[in-house]
Image 1 (tube, one colour):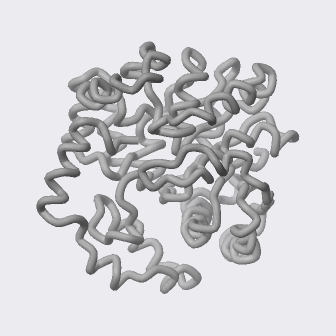
Image 2 (cartoon, one colour; image 1 turned 30 degrees about the vertical axis):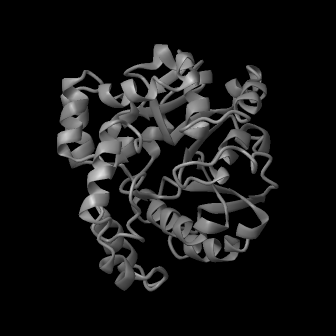
Length: 313
């Protein structure tokens, strides 16, 4: 089969994390018949990671290869909130930066791959603009809280259908044909709480293929949260059980394991990193183990914020 095309978009703050993501992609996902063309779209300051990434990839799969594209981020002045930098907006440029490709898998760099992406890659998008899994914003209480946002009226039809855009399969051909970039550029000027994720949900309604939750296993969601997915009709019970037991991609969208060791499923990330000679020692494990999150008072405030939907992605 042709190489699976996958893209990571990041700035200089995440050059170590992207090495972990790419290494796990090849360790778990490459085989004699499955190889990858990895695109790294990054700022000029982050481009130095290119040589390290080549070494990471060469040590794992000689048939996969890397293309680094450095860009000036046209969205660098876009709204930043929740500690998420404007670098995430770079995914909105992939249709233009990869003119030779009709389709690409995009993932954030705060991920750990657990299996081949061959099944994900073979999903036919046809006339869909993108494929993605549903996110925690769909919880009824979180949706109600977000409904106070003036722009949320544009998402009224997405209740129960709102995607987490950390892992998406983008139909670049359809994006070009529908000239979605013009809409994306207009929305990027607005103060959207979930940033470019909101942009994709607003502009792609009715044109989204919904992926099984196991392709975007949100680490901050525990078993009770997935039970709520079922009870509120967001996802089916079998789908949620598979996400819990057989995640294809673990997405650390909340707390980051390299900052806080005891974050949910963080031990899996550390076990992987510490088991790789070229990754071990890259992160400060002692510091991560010492940090156990906020104080009791801060945790109380945070719990309230989560219940109100203020920290969901």
